[in-house]
Image (cartoon, rainbow, N blue to C red; front, side):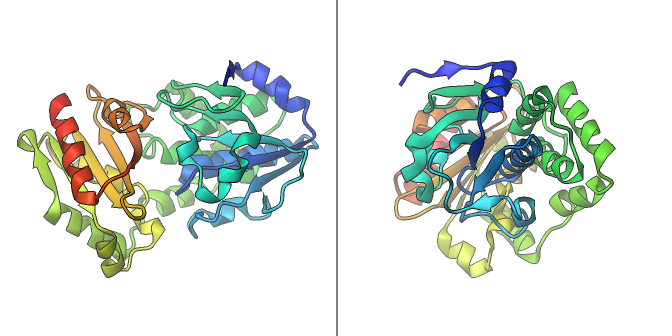
Length: 318
């Protein structure tokens, strides 16, 4: 497939021509894909268009309010399909597989990704896809209101670790400032997203520390989480969100990997790295991708085999 790369202005003009649109998010959806979809959907509706988000069956209670009143299970046949924050077809929920060929436009910020749509707007310099969506809507003449601002803030704050990660740029802060002008709830959102832990999550953190495998004198760490342990600890999907970043906070660790079972011989990997180390280079060896600071993918083997293979790859770059 030949993919046409668009600028923000070209994307704005393309969307202006559409009357009915449907927006897709990725599997195990995070704050960026869900927040980006919500702000895009609301912005398009503000401009008089018919827009819906295809209901993601994996959305968790923490984020469900973002999509309230915005979703559909049965989009219009002639709708224009857009994916947000989806770096490759493998990131789509299995339920979305029949719709992959319908996606015409991909809006994303992953530098290492798979082009799978006829058109794409990808800006790897942006910390979050939400930033790119905001720029496009602004060019189209949409104005932030409180619900849009809160969705957008969710997108940019979650993908920057509350503006702590190295991917945070001046533009990221400008977008956050625009959100602050329209909503007085950003402190509440921050507390809920970054300062509130369930007991299950705290138990999980303890388990990860106890069972972590350290590499190269503590510069790297691999945490393989069996499904049985998830069940034993009574974990919900919200308890597991961004857990891949936790091992990276251990003193001296430069690169950390978390592995989770996602079905028989299907292992979801997430790698986090400090500046100077490349998480995407590790994940790309297994068909994954992402950014230097944060990347992921799927490995088709047992959890033990995946942990060993990923650990070996990390040791080579460390």
